[in-house]
Image 1: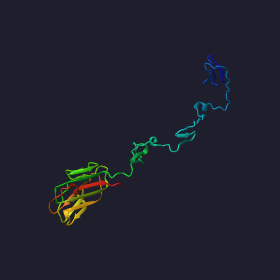
Image 2: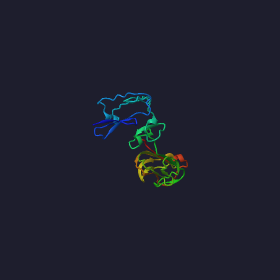
Image 3: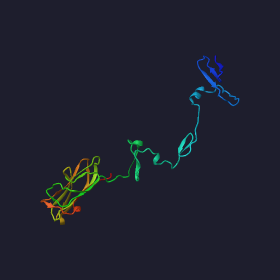
Image 4: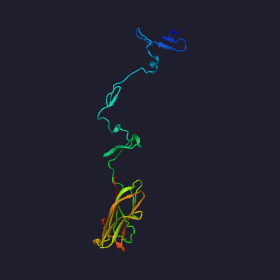
Length: 244
């Protein structure tokens, strides 16, 4: 049978029928006057009160997020600082989906760039016999792929694909049957030819599908050795990767 016990310490204990558990009602140290507490009827769910599941409270939010039970992000409020992006923003870049990066988004250059790119030229040297033409002066080289000692441009790692290459040379005298080849790994892939042209100028250009580590060279085929013209821009080799 349950019972009520009044303690001299200002508490009341309500015991279960088997006296194993109890509820303690404690009086504050100072009430400042009499108070009446009405105990609810049997509909009160003590389990819900104990676990706080019977409580419903929805504060009304204001500012960037508004609402109470259902919250709404205000219009025209989300800016770059509120986004979870893998890198810092750069003017002119666009937000792109990158599932492997932090937040799944990355700022990236719009449309890409024609990079890598390079240009080299040379002045007087003796050429002929189909040997590699060495352009001894590097004008610019974004990925340091051109070797001014060997005349080879090596496609950088991760930069395989479609490239535009061009080369021109002038031997300074009229010459019949001068062939100008752009090669990949020593094999002719593009060819320009000059007949009986004044100053013996020839040009070759085109698009090639190349792979990383491929070596691109230029060879000038002549029946006899000849000296190149002494003006650098008349003898040049250049190229860049195409945006695809």
